[in-house]
Image (cartoon, rainbow, N blue to C red):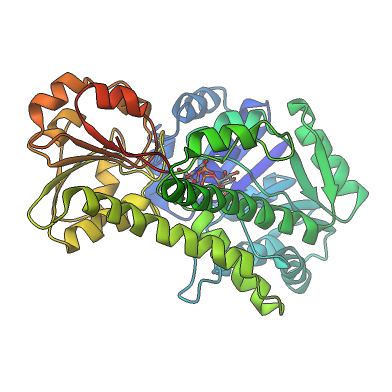
Amino acid sequence: MKIAVVGTGYVGLVTGACFADMGNEVICVDIDKDKIKKLENGIIPIYEPGIEEMVMRNKHAKRLSFTTELKEAIKKCQIIFVCVGTPPKESGEADLSYVENVARVIAEVMDSYKVIVEKSTVPVETGQQVAKTIRNYNVHKVEFDVVSNPEFLREGSAISDFMHPDRIVVGCETEKAKEIMRELYEPLHAPIIFTDIKSAEIIKHASNSFLATKISFINSIANICELSGADVEKVAEGMGYDKRIGRHFLNAGVGYGGSCFPKDVDAFVGIAGKMGYDFKLLKATQEVNNQQKKRFVRKIEKSLWIIKGKTIGILGLAFKPNTDDMRSAPSIDIIKELQNEGAKIKAYDPEAMEKAKEVLKDVEYCTSPYEAAKDADALVIVTDWNEFKELDFKKIKVLMRHFLIVDGRNIYDPQKVKGEGFNYISIGRKDV
Ligand code: UGA
């Protein structure tokens, strides 16, 4: 099938590369000339395991191409995926001007039947608005369908999530669009849930909000565990065996971050409010998440007594492992608060340091976890990169000024760290 993917951000690039890899002919479009030039030369603007090889393989096979010519791409393809950005406005609402702009251009140039697939995360009713815009500007009075096909990719495992999805959600209104979407996704052998457009849009909001709520729930349980002397890891395990609950996303930590959960939860609270529903549960999810980062800084303070003048080594800056993404990373709030209290920060992350430099100033960026530990009064784990799970504690002990590890992701066995001669503070477990 011939597919145009408009927007070569995270979602667009992964979607385009994966559809090409499935044998389709894909044209990726972006207004950013520099980005398109780089992509044509095999320079990938994001860090995502496997994406570079996949892009190159499909480019060479001539199934994947990059262009800034939106109109040409629309004319050539029957299916158009809209993957442009929907950044938050100051009010927290999503800015849909890029989506509207693409819809208008499609309407003006299309001269044969098109399926316009909305993949960017958008507020419910956007599909309806896109269809209305296309009807209003439909110069050649051509037949078209609008489809909502939300994505559920996680950064760091996006390709495998795309190729092996738990489910595919398709919101559409006609049999014709339904058949085209079925044919497109059939090779993945995953369950396809066909719904109306609004339900598909809400499935996306509801899924991300539910996962964020699950994280805030387990973080609240972790806080109760700390107060009562219980162990949140055991509690999560005990809960997780119940199939109705499940163990996934019950990892207590410093709170969720990233480009999706904070923004999407915010947007959903806003959309619900606009429709006349006060989504108190989600507001509590947000509140717990904000408090979790503050509580973590208080934990560090409690162990060091005075933060002012102390050197703190931070391991992990990205909002989660296997990505260089710093958007709404918990490390930002944590480091800024420690700096406000007068700490000197040394930090190491395997991938995110270049991006971190743009948002976190006055930080000594280190080339290894050991360099970050050197002369530190505390070593603080903020992101659970695998690389940190097997550190040489003996080496670290020689380097640090004070033997304290504060683990915001529970990556170590407390008894093991204690056995190495460290004080160890983690989340929802007893300090040792
Ligand atoms: C999330 C969803 O998981 C995807 O399904 C969705 O497609 C995507 O948003 C999106 O809307 O684009 P992502 O933001 O890449 O994916 O990352 P997650 O793996 O969901 O992690 C989000 C945050 O929650 C991270 O900061 C992570 O450290 C944190 N987290 C996750 C926890 O604190 N505990 C957990 O148990 C799980």
